Length: 152
Length: 423
Image 1 (cartoon, chains in turn blue, cyan):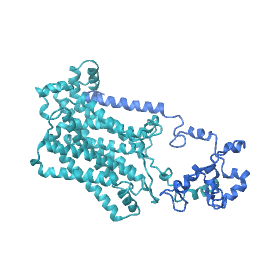
Image 2 (tube, rainbow over the protein chains, first blue to last red):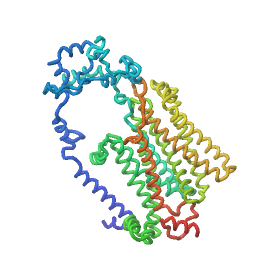
Image 3 (tube, rainbow over the protein chains, first blue to last red):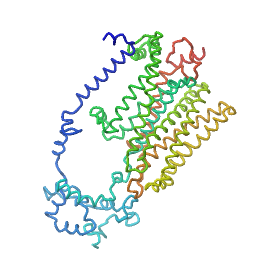
Image 4 (cartoon, one colour):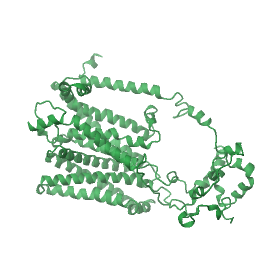
């Protein structure tokens, strides 16, 4: 202590200030770190329960198959077989729980999400420039999404 | 791997294979113009500090007049360095968490500590030791709120004896020595982040941290020249030509090294002709033509190199006024050139990915929270802070050493500065 006090005053003040900053940091860390942090890893352990407690809103293709098997089978044979039903129809859990809840009809927005021309898309995806291809924005007039080769 | 996960993966793979690379998902770059501004600002901090270090570490007396200006410039930009990141984040109010729950293997998380170290342990400490004598003087002569602030800045140490002042100078020098690698770390980290992204042919390069550091030094030095000339112009005083010539000599040599390393990088890319070279070539001649070839290479590097290089050889035949004009123009061009370089790296690097299938497009917003209006404001803010800092902490040190009246108390007011000059 004597040695510390005999140091030049600017050094002792800075050492004290540094100690104060470090103490403030650890106090803030103690107060602001969530209780469950580090329980399982570098995140809040309680976040798992919070996320698991959320109401699911996706149903999954298998659930669609239970009532709409015919369409799911048709889709499985066509170019869109890799797509999940909810990719175009949106989250379907509410509809599964209560069939009275209707899902919004997929339209132009869903088609151009994959088929609008973009140089970053692989060539095997059919791509069009909507302004040149058809400006009506009703793709289903000529295409059947569940069976793209079929003429409606 | 459990069966459900495998089934889901089999369902998912046909949808993503060869297509949905993370940065292609939205067809627009995720890192916007704010991420261009961010490395630009940190680079200016590092460069301005290196300029100040030349005075302390290498004892370059001729640069004395800009020592404090360079340090205050570094401080003003340092205070704004994290703002572009905060605006870019979805939840800026959570920023403190990076410090509260530090992740030691994440370079982005570690930046919080590098930033804190550089600000608190380097810049503020060096400024404090340099200004301590003035704080004590000002706290004795000033009253009211200003006097209170100066008294607080002294931290209660009013000892102005010869040994105490010698210790201040010695500590300042030690901090400068520590500060140089710290400045490199501050900005090298940005290059490290980009250089670590292996999937990007533009970024994944070991030279990236070095290129970032060198361009930072160049931009910071250019900023010091720009700020010095601008300050002299606003105060209607003539710049110290010896200091200015030396500053621009250092700037020229730094620019030579920077241009050589960046040229070497491009030469190596062209010669090794790895898979991404065609994409880079078409970017340079297409989407980045104006910013890369015209902005960065031509106006930001070649023209200043030629002008500053010519002045190195023919300085004595060019009048002071014309030299000042050339220096001012070159520093402005270099500043814009380095900004263009940041744009090319950050935005250009995101316009394509490892898929090499084509380009994405980036259209800057105007008034959005990541638009050019905000970027402009964030670039202007450090200059506003610098103006305030200059007003309060830089009165008599510019533009020449001779302006400091020996033995007189150096007061922070510009009016008193004018009196000092008149005297």
